[in-house]
Length: 120
Image (cartoon, rainbow, N blue to C red):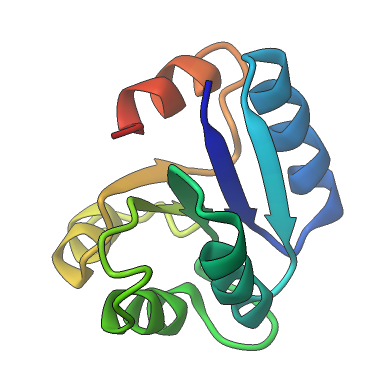
């Protein structure tokens, strides 16, 4: 189906999302930091990036800015994948340039369908 880059530092979230996406037929690339996510976005040419906001080296906001500022990655579909699920967080993410918003924790029953809807 699609190549999806998951930028996520929590091993439990990585394992769950990897399992759900692979079960749905996707190829999954995983980066634990924003910097590695940016590298893999260039190297791996993903169809979709699921970007955590709270990362150890640079936050997802900054990583998105870098991706949007580089010709090779400016048009990537990048979705905020975050536990920041307070009122207004979705609007803030979309206003910042994310192409979508997926809150954590993952809803196992609907996750694969939601990701398919976010693909270009």
